[in-house]
Every structure is written in C-alpha cells, then in structure tokens.
Image (cartoon, rainbow, N blue to C red; front, side):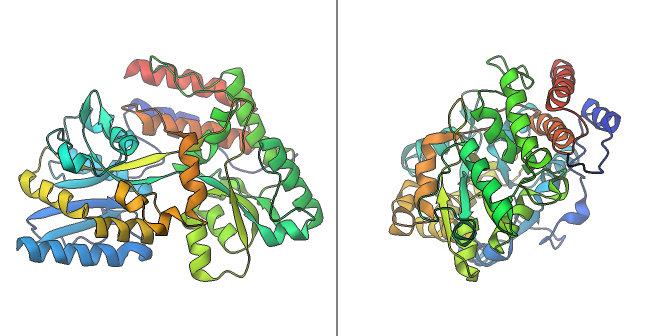
Length: 428
C-alpha cells in the first residue's frame, strides 16, 4: 500500500467554513501584480495573466486608453487568491469596475448585491456574437450577470513515444474507458521508467476539477435538484475509489499526488515525464511551441459506467455595482469583443473561443489540437452554481486528499464530507 505523510486539520477547515472563509484561498493584497496604486479612470481585475498573454493585455490596455483618452488600471491576481481578493475589495468598498470572474461564482456576488445585471448589454447583435451555451453559462436566476470571457474543457493527452516504448499502439490506443486507461498505465509502469499518469491531489482549487470527471462518469452527482449535497452516494464512492486506487493500489501515478497541482502534472507531461494527463488544449499548444521532442496524441476523457464527461468552465466579465464608471465599463467590455482581439486572445492563451466567428476560423476548426476539444463539447458538464461553491469544492478537495493519501477510505472520506456539506448548506 502506498502511503503519504500528510495530515489534515478538519477542525480548522470547519471553522473557516462556518465563518464564511476558505482555507485554500489566502486573501492577500500583496499578491496583486500590475497595479500601480494610483487613481485610474477605470479598473479591470483579472486572474492568471501569464507570460503567454501579458503582451495581449499590454497592447489592448494601451489601445483602449488611447481610444477613450483615459487611464485603465489592470490588476492580475493568482487563481488561488482570486475569490478572497475580490471579496476583500467588495467588502472594503474598493471593488474594481470590471472583473473577470468564473461564472460558477456569480451566485455568490449576486447574493452580496456586488455585480450588475447585464441583460441590456446581452441582447441583439452583441449577444449574437456568442455561442449560446457560453452565453447561457453566465446567467443566474433568469438574468445575465456576466459576458463570457473564456471557456475551457478537457481531453486526455498521451505521449506517443512512451506508448511505443511500452508496446502500446501510439496511433490508435485503447483509451476509451477508465479501465482501458488503467491497463495502459499499468503496462507503461511495468515496461518503462516513465510515470504513467498524472494525478492531482494538492491542496488547491483545481484538484476538484480534475477529479469530477471520475465522480460524474461513475453516475454520481455533487448536489441534487434541490441543491442538497449527495456526494457520498455508492456511485460517488466508486468514483473516488477508482481515483485513489490509481495511486494507492495500482501505483501508476507520479510519486506524490498530494503535492501535485493541475499545473504541476500538466508541466510534467509537457516535459515528457508522464505517459498521460487530463488537461486543457494549451498543454498541446505549449508542447508545439516549445518543441519538447516527443509526439503526443489527444483522445476524449475516458468513459465510465455512467458515461463520459468533459468539465466545461466558463469565465465571465462582470461589472461591479460599486463602479462609478458603468458606461465606460460597458465600453471596455465591448472593446474586448472585437473579433480580431478575441481571436488573438483565444489563440495565444489556449482557450476555447466564446465567439462563433472566432471558432469558425481555420486556426481552430482545422487544428489537430483543437479538433478533439471541439468534439468534447458534446460531453461538456459544468460545476453546479452554488453561492458557496468554492467552500463546497474546498471540502471535496479535502475528501479527495484523504482518500488519495490513504488517511481515510473513500467511503469514510465522502461520508464525513457529506455531513459537513449538509451542515454548511443548511447554515447558508
């Protein structure tokens, strides 16, 4: 049995949930980058501006400032600090004018009366720019509270060189089901020195998003139709058991999933150090750009007993109610949805296009990298929209860690999570 020395402070987590906080997100204004601290005519707060997209924001910021003869302050925060940072600014009456915000978090801001409905903006020719599913992903209680900014789903990447070395077919691999994926991972582990499969188990938001494919495809749900948690169903236990057993029983993962974030396992794969990983399209784009020295293939996320699911995430642009420049904020939003700007952003960042005209361009439609992700749209599933989803996800991550680390059985971990989530939801 594989064991990891990692202890979990359940009492600390429950205290944070009871107080409306989140252990995984440490709000820290010191984590802001890009802010000069001065007064600006309008402020935009976004998340995760990396080197691959910094130039886009530098150029568009300068262009908007010149076009409107104003100053635009751009602030970027890390994803781990995003939610608490925004809440701190809203609670401190220092909200930005416009913010990039995951659509699944919209209910929480609506509950605080912190963002504006955008029904007037999201109509006519502006609304027609978007894929319907992307636009509808920004609704809550019958109104649009965001404009779709970016979208992503996931597929399974595999290293063709590693597959060939393990005696597996690199061109037509048998990876349709979880069991077939496990068979391939076992053969890679037995026949090569490469770790077969990347598994996320770190104390991070994205650990949940990596796991939910397994949960859903085994027939489990996170909440029922009334929004009550149902995470410890027999199907849920089966999903978490399979996930944990990849490390605990089968030993086909990298050595320490509990210290590995989604980004860590993606980067391991991009370096040629993993046989397989579930990831976004930009894993393939990064490999192509960096000429990593190996060939890769992309297939759909494996199917489970109850079907196949690809986690679909939509980020949105929102306007904060505290803004004193709401008209200018709408101008900024319209500015970003120029077709050329959206093509530049989506192609550089590696996100699914949210605008139909961009998605129809050959860059996406004819791409061997993008093709599987466009196909994955038919398997798309989003996280439930809950006002306290981040805290909900935090508690699920703890259960995942406990099972993957061998501290609790999947049944015990999910039973405890169910009890805590019921208390949290009832308190809300």
